[in-house]
Length: 407
Image (tube, rainbow, N blue to C red; front, side):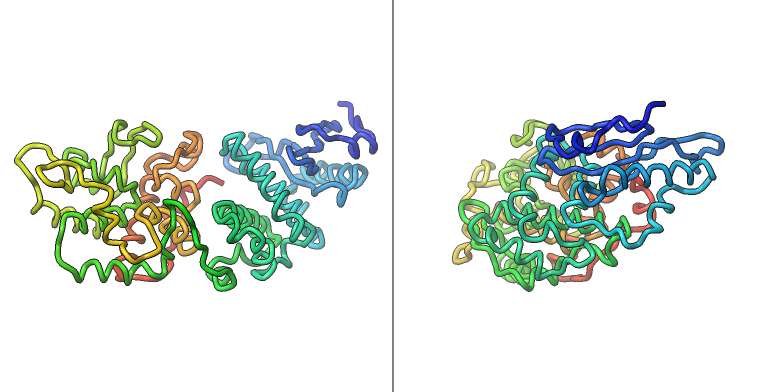
């Protein structure tokens, strides 16, 4: 097996994104943004299958912090460890001094998560960090990054580009959570403490969202007022984090009260055209019970009917936000922010699926379909409790579901 195929000048000049082999399973990885890191692909004993082996990719560090000669030496040491029957990952992690910079950790995080992302998502992850975050914290070690560092990185775009800034906050969180899982940080990404350093965003257009801390009081105020079909429709929109157009078009035939599910057919899902099921929290089910009083006939009809059984208008729901700087569609963003900050044990893919955002099928397969739906129910049940004011505590994922997570 030929080794030492690469030359130092080739490593330095490598620009095209891809994988460059040095031999013996050692590769130089070049990201779309030009970042470079080393990985060793090696066959190791499979603990789950005695006598069998499995392939493992082990990160060795980023270039130029880890040079070609240093990468080769690390690869030699890990090959010896495997030959001696030792765990190469544990062997690598014995060197506690090697804590990567944020940029190097981001590249490794991307390498680990990219198989579950689309090419566009993966490219956006790296390019946005390179443009907005690396200049501020890219050279800092991940174990030294604080809330103030993150706030400083986000502040230039926090108000001028709110949508981008929220994505950046989420992506920084992914990197720091990955760093904790890799043993480089003692804790994951700061969430609530970071919120204290960032002022409220004045979002424009149709997506101005209410901070989740204000939502329980808003819902309590709604509940204290007279019962109307429009008010029930808005409450159901909030509890299900659904698009209000889907709520206004919902039919009783879509509702399975026994299973506690809202099974929305493809024709209702105009955003992506795919059938989607929403799990119904006890609070959402209670709204449906109250909505039965507004049924317009014995057969199938709208759950929240307007005059003559017609579809409610968009303004019917919007009027309940009169005087507030928010819009109905913004409650979806409220839910997503709450999920990220108050439900850290729930994977991001689960929160995205709860919003009916398109998730690659291989991600769903990785979590197992039954467990994936159960995790969504756990998330929306916790949301229902939070919104109704019955519980404001962070809810951890049940053990049986955490055990279902891949890896």
